[in-house]
Length: 236
View 1 (cartoon, rainbow, N blue to C red):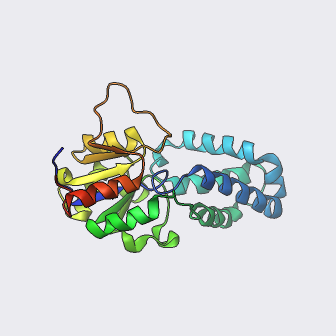
View 2 (view 1 turned 120 degrees about the vertical axis):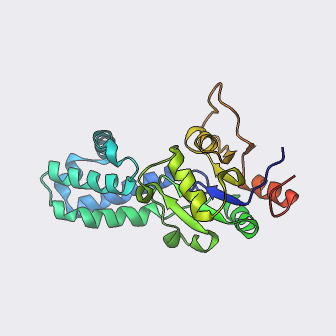
């Protein structure tokens, strides 16, 4: 398959690092904090109940689905309010959430491959999540970043992919989007006119009847190798 790759847009969660361990850490950190700062809230909303409350808050606020930070803070606020706690603690709780959220453990292949890829083509982070590349320490490897909360719409909406291409200064058909989710990443990118690489981390099956991605790998190393074999532009 011959096509140019002049830039890459890259998903973060479950592409560079697995999110489930982060989610579990967040739950433990917030539970420990509530037990100390608002015991009545911890009693009313232990970890499992807090998870249910978070799902309820997400379901009740579809207008905020592009802004996971706002939804997380709102979840803490609702838990405090419904348990008779001090709602003013919500900011403190969110700060703890944010710190725990940005403690990541990379997939074994991710860091070395990311360095190799970023040395070849400009890379833009494109995420529905709220990872902070500055806090994580990856910002120097990225040309730019586009977050759903700032853009105002989330993947798989075409506009967020096109916004990333515009920021990169590269046409969509010469931009390769890389991510783990078939619908949110690969199919969303292709519908927006980008090329797509599905990074199959084993968490999702490809939807029946859908056009396959331009590239399919199960490690980021394989993508770095593909770019190396084709030179700087990614052309065959």
